[in-house]
Length: 523
Image (cartoon, rainbow, N blue to C red):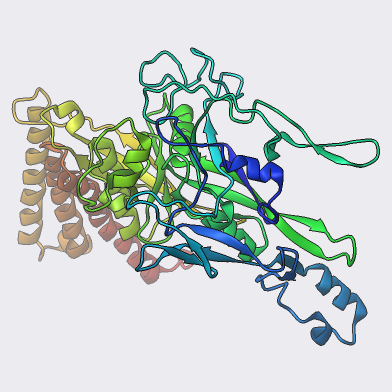
């Protein structure tokens, strides 16, 4: 089965049709709770066994495909080690039921009759996957008021997919899900139970061996994380961690792949985890796929980077509807690249931060500022500045994400000096007077540069020092005005640059005297 908490798949799921399996073929219900046979329709896939699903072949992974005897013919230890890494897979093939022009369906030379235009009844059935209402303890229930999900009436009752017919399923019998009891003499007796379908509100034709998480694990033969995909049972986007399961053949000791154990994580669940841990924090945390086009995994704002749209037109959102089955027929779930997030201020912060980070090559040790604006009349939330930083996150099994943290930066307007402020004359007056006095001294010094006293002081270096002091006084005027990006940069550069410019002639003059007079030992 595959469900919201995890999944499992078995290579031996349909290796034989037993009475206990056959019993399930009469246990399906439609969206309204009406009993229907568990029969396949054209276009659906099924597994066709090769030699009763008892024949095995080398699995498709690289280690299993090696010819150990040829590679390590002269080294028995390495050959044995190589053969221990070989896995064997049960042989089967996937088939698809195709309609013929005459309205019948041919599957492996067997005729399957189309009895009506919209309803196909075939001789090929399936073991249904049933979705149940669950109580607070995690057990299936159909008792009124005990469903953990409120439902359309908010009374916690269990309904079928139409949202109106209550679930009342009390089937009993020797279903395969009930198990097998072994007698003292070793005879296997099917257990009769009546709890298999309690609270089962919908049935699906589901075989995990078609699912991407299963096929990828079978090909790799090692634990792995899947790419985000749409879950079968609830149409949510998520990822799966899958681990192969093996058994050792009793006859020849071969390591046989028999299934996959999988754990599912919805993107909504990852977002809920971020929200819970960063609920009271001002920072925004976003997880982004490293690979292009850089889809959003989740964020602490609740954004998951997915949206439901019409299958025929992805530009139109899917309408709200309670009927899950109908919604699945007309709608689909698509992912959104982080660069295209524009719905609200928080999404713009994430999108803009990502674009600036990408433009700068995702520097791991730098904070990059980003200013975001939103189309709103509320100035308090319409714009803001954040400092963003990213870190790459990789995990064994194929996860390759980038975690981006955005921290708000306060903008203080009260420290700006504008005309009319109390500090304005105290800043402007000394700056202007200082620069005027320096320029007057420079002119006077230049005018008398031929006199013996001025010549002895090296008027060129002294004049450069005085000119630098004049510019340093004028640089104080850059403190006037609002705190814009250009003015903030000007203040930082002007004050430091002119300070260095003023002192440089003095250092040069000192160095020149040292070269002329030496270290003082000759005096």
